[in-house]
Amino acid sequence: MIGGGAAGLGGALALGRARRSVLVLDSGQPRNAPAQRMHAYPGRNGTPPAEYLSDVRREASGYGVRIEEGTVVGVDRDDQGFRVALADGGSVHAARLLVTTGLVDELPDVPGVAELWGRDVLHCPYCHGWEVRDQAIGVLATTPLAVHAALMWRQWSKDITLFLHTLSGLDELGDDKREELAARDITVVTGEVVSLEAQAGRLSGVRLADGEVRACQALVVAPHMTARAAFLTTLGLEPVEQEMHGTVIGSRIPVDPGGQTTVPGVWAAGNITNLSDQVIGSAAAGVRAGAAINADLTAEETRRAVAARRALFSAEVESQVCERVLGTRRHGL
Image 1: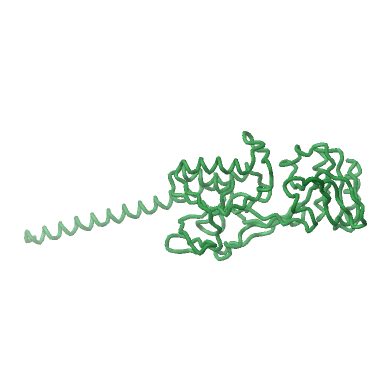
Image 2: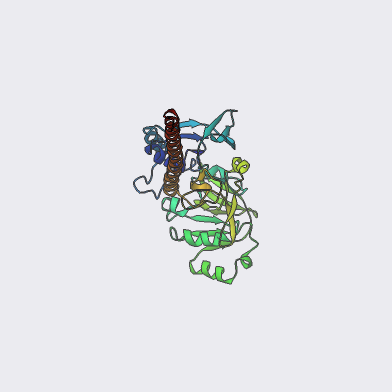
């Protein structure tokens, strides 16, 4: 496993329980590290991400799964399947790979956004909407999809402000979108956002280019989500763009329903393949991929066993034929 988040550990757990030899390489950079709690995971709702990972690591280790710290910088094929090169100069070999390295959230270049990311600067209403319900929520527009976001977050608060920011103005939205925003009582503010204001480490407002500060307790942003997949290029695996309503929102590695990539022997799961997966979805995708890998290994082992049996049978037949020939010669027949 390359990646030790929910998807990687889900795959490791499935394969460990299948009595496979499993190594998880974890760089220790989970995407949800800034978040205090994870949500929408039945039975684990409200669990701190670090606590969740610790629990699953312990479970996987109980089935013989090895988990080691390591950052992968390259992958090549070798006579054992794959050679995985690490940043510290070491390497490991694997018969199959499950890549679950996730993605990088590329945030808007606005002072204060990165510092408050995961606390008061948010992107997913299903992850954080309940926690900021009924508060003053701003939506920072960096693409036309911000209108969709503002309408969505309206479910959690009546106080929604759409900051047009880099959009040129209301005319860019179109008549239909302007009508939708007005119908839902969403305030629209023109002008570029130049920074966020904070008090005691919490978001208090949004400062515009003209100096005006609009009160705000939570700010929704749409990061560009880039797959962590540079080390896969040597195998011929390149990320593809993922769009939403005609707007590119990031990049991903395409896979089939079981997580198999276009490269034989390589599977992927989690946010590296699906930008919208939450923790529960990533874990489920990892388990599916783990099962698919076990099935693939089983098929290969069966082919080898059949080939070995046929070779043994052929050798036995040849030996019997030779014995008959020699016996015939000895008896002068």
